[in-house]
Length: 120
Image 1: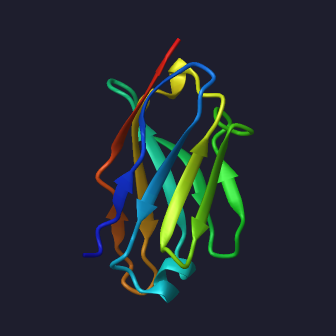
Image 2 (image 1 turned 180 degrees about the vertical axis):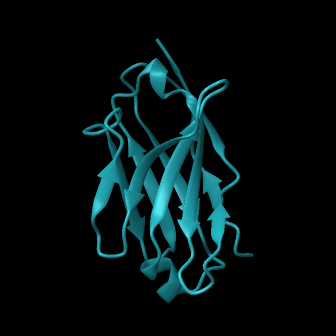
Image 3 (image 1 turned 90 degrees about the vertical axis):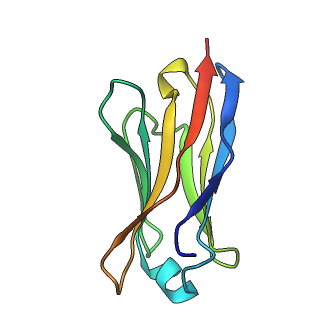
């Protein structure tokens, strides 16, 4: 399958950490490495927010709200993208989605989403 499969997430207290994973085993390695990857989040009643982006050249971009706390990375051998989340706050509570604009095909693929809940 080409649909990314997410894992991780859960419930933590304020100040805790979580790591989200997004495995794209159905995507050929060259496409995995040559495509930009993103993490989005959306909480109930709020607008979808771009949290982090990882470009093929290794450059990264973060939303101001998570800068310094979140880190996006990838493991090409496992074809998995990660979002390390530290110093979590209740405002980080949302459903998180990984996303890729797949080079070559020009389409977008989305993970199924995973809930992150942070209690104060």
